[in-house]
Figure (cartoon, rainbow, N blue to C red):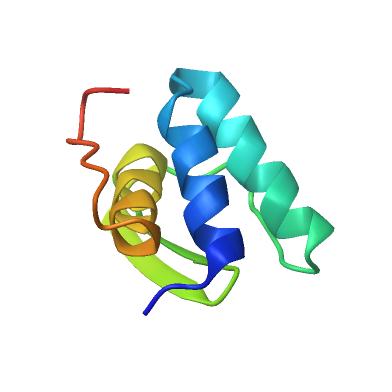
Length: 82
């Protein structure tokens, strides 16, 4: 079962698009003590660990979409829909 903080954040960022979504996730990771690299190759494996939820993806957008899906399973955020 997913925690309430992760679920609420997932619902919030699911409404965002592109750079706004990426910046929100980066800020949340940094504010909770994590590291977020700002320069990464587009097809690199990215892992997001935030609010107790772990997800990976090929590239930043896919990793964020997978994190949202894990944090709030009722949401669907297909890759490329950002």
